[in-house]
Amino acid sequence: MIKIHDRDLRGKTKTGWLDSAHTFSFGHFHDPARMGFRSLRVINDDRVIPGAGFGTHPHNNMEIISYVLDGSLEHKDSMGTGSVIKPGEVQRMSAGTGVTHSEFNGSKDDPVHFLQIWIEPKTKGLEPSYEQKPLNVNKGEFVLIGDRHGSDGAITIHQDVKMYLVHLEEGQSASYSFEPQRGGFLHLVRGQVTLNGESLKEGDGAEITDVETVTIAAQEPSEVLLFDLA
Image (tube, rainbow, N blue to C red; front, side, top):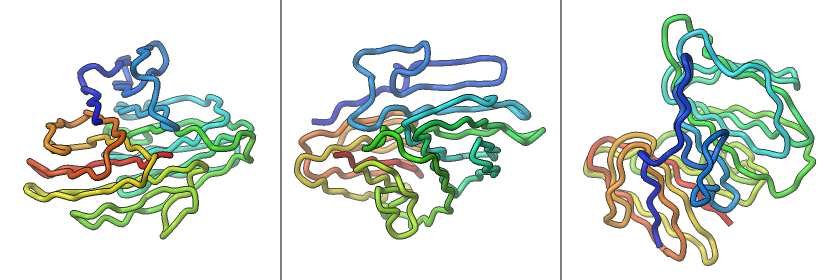
């Protein structure tokens, strides 16, 4: 079964500096039908104006992944990490027993557009840790960017999950097969595709259960995140 999460039904947070869309329940947005999917808990599509951002705030027992689409995101945390995340890189922060951090748009001129993704860890009470890696993109192929082993240069996510990125040119397609008992969640980052014949537009998501193989076909240049979840 494929269940579409229409982008227009996402929760919204809009302030003077932040424009955010929430695929799943988050903050003031609560929808019993959108409480996450398996261990995937949050996909927030955030846009932040120049010079603004999220001040220092706490987290615990969550795998927090940031993926920058445009601009750059400045990160600081209580582990002593200070970094700038740019397009073509992915960051993972394991909050574990507790960490504070801030995320800012360090640019005075350009907005930043990024996805913040939360995954519930398999084990609570982990020691907080941080990781940031460049992405290898091969158009038309599923590229592993995160899993529990940090395989092939991917970030390490402390959960039984595989996180893939695929870039497709117009007319290209790519197929992915799930092992028994596993499910998937697809987030269309950019573009327009069909998923096993069902149309998806930029910002849409799709829960995938009891489906052996999915085929993603691009109607225009597109970028897709796919989570393979226990």
